[in-house]
Image (cartoon, rainbow, N blue to C red; front, side, top):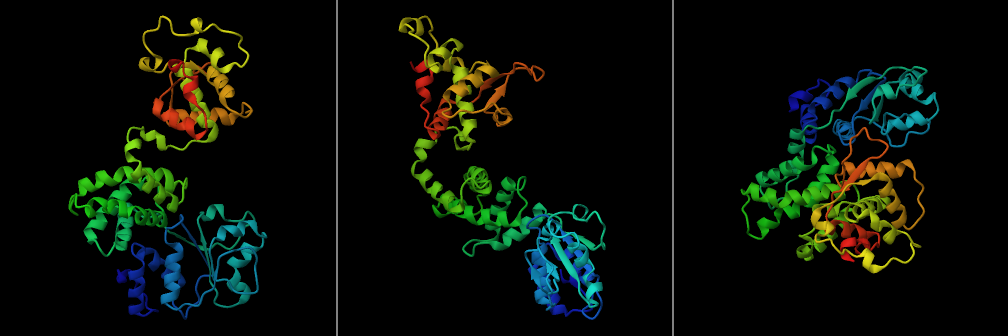
Length: 401
């Protein structure tokens, strides 16, 4: 590891300490040292370091400057050019909103002050989207790529709990990455999620149900929990503290919740919930009953004409029936409390429900004038959704008259 950080201008022991603190970033640290040059040499006037969030840019630079005792000034808000010399500037993309002459001046700061000053800019965007239209001095570019899955496994495995073996914690990290790696490469996010869910992973072990080597049983226990965490904690629907409290409550009410569909835990926008309720009513109520349920002044209708005289099978046993878009919208505007304008947002939410497979489109894509849909959720699920908006859906279902 230290071979990648060999540099004639720095002590080998210091370089070894640097390498130990920068796992999986030795190559980038070595390149940065080469760009910075030896302490007694004039270095390049400006260096632009870019990469996604939590890719190690700031950490590598901080460790190099601290361990190698390089004089530096870190600036975290880049708005104005003061009389001080800024050597390292974090969040450099803020410079694009500043005076047009600020960035070109910083990139030529070494020339302006006639001293050995190197400006290092750190940003999450590429230089092509950063370069001013008027032109400027071109800095040296250094890219920090995202961590690979193997690198994340190596880094996160170093955070193991002292009460458990390294192999046990490494197997947990492998399961965690199997769930989250496709949607998240952020090292800080993954580290937070690993710490948050590790106690759940250890539960079967602490209860004596499995051994540390029973990886398959441990995986079966934790995978549903991690997928649920991805829908809540990672997407910031709830905070970490709320997530832990929710898990305690769910353990107490586990028996009542086991029968519900996994979709029950999906959180939808307010109007999407009413659209789904309207879709369920359109799928399971005959079209002729809409006037009875949703028209306030429908006149007197004899009960004998309305009840199911000759129907032997309920609509719920027959399954959902297709309905046109105009019927869905008519029911939606009847059940929603507030007045809603028929904007593009409403139609985009219908498309989102189809994408989530809560609705299915049964007409052909080329039938734009009269698309038809079917509701694809269970009664338990729609009742749970209805409770969140204080809507008693059972009162509007023909089968429950």
